[in-house]
Length: 331
Ligand SMILES: [Zn+2]
Image (spheres, rainbow, N blue to C red):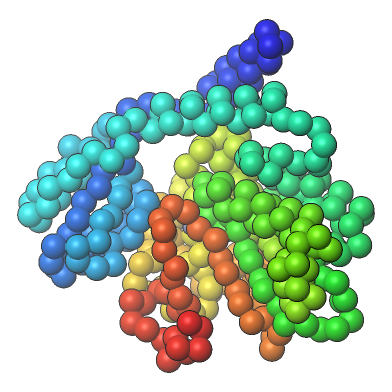
């Protein structure tokens, strides 16, 4: 036990030395009551580097905003000027970050060795890639494809689970962690992959689902951002592209697709967390996902992009709050 504690302390002090410190940062919650207030919040998100954790889409729905100690008064005043009070939803992000590091280290120390990965813990990009490679080499259901490379040259890997690859079955397709800091989503992809592969042949429902569909996953759709969120900045969201003429790094890959490009809920400002990039599919990561879906055109029956946080199903095409014509078919 003592050894565990020492390892943990060493890891922890290393983490503190290299990472962005969010001590004193808060998440505040505001509930707009009018369309005008909704529009103000939406404009604030697109026109500033203020970090919105949930988008303002409709009156009476909460919006969570991450504020630094320096920006808090300014944001609170702007909200008041538009008739909105707020409450403090998370009092100190720095404390949460430290608790998360402690939890990861503790789980690592206690992890049993009977699986290639502890599917209930967070893992680095390298660990997730090693897990997929191991699975592909040991489980005949699983194959992997290096579908593309990121801005910094990391592999974007798709894992396929199929009981008969020549059958061209309909496909259920998932991408996870296109937003770097949404760690629970890569963990969710890994968890689903583990559940399906370990349940096939023993669990009747899983076996039937694998016999009917091919299952495809891109567990880390934004590898550079994900790696950076581990090494430097827990709250990094975008990819790591250099923006010409700006010191601010990164494109919001989820705003870089052709559908609704550059519209509502995205920003042309490189410093915005929702920066859409110079043009649709300007980024290698979004190009890769686009090409994967296109390659399976006609077979993809469900495509699910995992995000956190919220408890929401968003239908395509969610750049707009108007329902698409395909909505009944999607439901
Ligand atoms: Zn997201």
